[in-house]
Length: 234
Length: 234
Image 1 (cartoon, chains in turn yellow, red):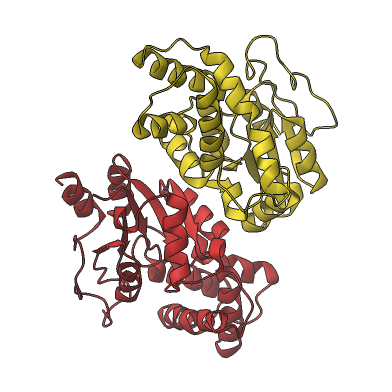
Image 2 (cartoon, each protein chain N blue to C red):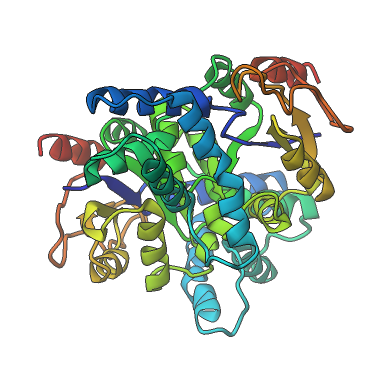
């Protein structure tokens, strides 16, 4: 019997790739620069895991995701043709991660799920990023669990345990909903229920690393509306 | 220029006294006990400050508010005529603090304020208490700052500083809205803007410790709807 649902955000609830491409392309157009916005978005995201690893291994002190994103961005800008940006432009571009659009089923699915379950973001994004995103996209979170609250990035077990403790529930009453196997496996290792939602468009054409269910998940809905239907039918 | 509003919850947004009286009276009726539900509610609340002081002075390790409430409740029950309660009854009664009703202006005021500002709970209540309350009462928080996140109760400065840091804003862009001088003075000491909202009914008839503005507050609205009007008029 599940009481609370935790949602991975980047890729599972929002389409990070299209949003980043949109803003990179807009800024490039405004500066008359010719760049491959999709390659830029993919390179930016590719820096995400390694930069969190630096924190996880203690090679960097705790650093919130906005600052990791900015560090990767500065390196990328130095390598690409997108030069001459003002400080304001760079801040605006770095905040593209605050302005991501939800997948079409996300808001209607979350609204339905909220009627019967506590629904919470569970993300490596920092608090202000997740709050800005939720306000813009209309994500009706009851709570926002950010890695910043625990100073541990997923898949560190401290983050999963910390969220369960704050909910005041047994782990088995908490379900992680995610499009990524590593996240779900870390949740299952802490006793949480798991729902795998495939998001085949997350990585754009040609890359679908997490397209099919793998492992022994509690539930494998096709999207968040389907999850609402399955959980309400018991 | 304020960007985010933090709200004290008990007394400022919700009417704790009426809610506790309602549930104490209901349980007493069900058990045929004759007790003064208002005196019970006041005695329960009177234990709140001293129990947090034990944590603040390090005489108790970090203890969340649900557990402090339960400790005070157990002592009160032993002193009053309300005996023979089951474990389930006691849990239900302790959770009365999760089931408090908002003042009539709270939800409409918060909805209006949310259009232009980040709105967040800022309370000594634990996360699950505040989440349950918001779901039941329809409080449309963008975020819930609980003392539990920082393991520091108000008016410890760590709580105010911690919330401002997570918002990623300068303290002057954050306003605390509260019915209590101690809370507002602690916020002002950290550089936050302040709004005093008098809640003359908080303590019931005959006791109005924080009825009138005192000190140099940024704003002294009559209620949360008035705050929305004042802030939108700039």
